[in-house]
Image (tube, rainbow, N blue to C red; front, side, top):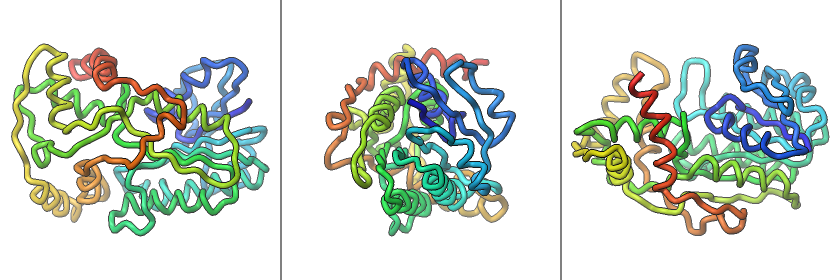
Length: 302
């Protein structure tokens, strides 16, 4: 089986590649945006790296030659001058779907986000919803996995938690009282692998979250306890943070914006977790946090 992965050099991508290459009989086409990124990927006889251009449909389709399933990970939460919600979340999805059609690739897996909605006033969730709609309307056999905050070595969400936990006093937006459902990236990789094997007519949407709904501040407190100390919290009003981000946005593009603040301070909830349907044995939050601490703490103290 040959699986193509876009955004293969991302935090999720590198962990997914490790999972896929641990399976015999799987070849992986790792798609990244530059030759430098391709060269930086871990070497494996099962992996061939390709620098792709989402604006060049023919070259993109050629890179996917022989693929049984495409896993599309590309996308951003933080915009920049060169990568916007439109280009990174929507246009890249359309490009990969078009390339699949050109090559006759019928299986597609999209990793999306909780809250994705093409009608959402939030620009990030809106873009994720429009990306999902492209996949749903494509006619491909597809799986869409909506995820919460992801925890794994090198992940931005994990770094933020470990950094805050390492402090004696941490300042959190809204006091960190919003409820999150952290998902171990290893669990997401298992779900993606199972979706690559499946096949059905049309698109199936799964909401996959971690096993424990927990206030963000309590997650940080638990990480601090694993480090052997306690952390106290100060609260920054969300409205004040959004005002500051809006003012800063007058002088720069992207970064922390009111849109991002809405996303990272929202409660994460699902009507039905897809862990059973996808055959995923969810990792307890305590075990996930324990996995994070050695690598992330080393990074903090370099």
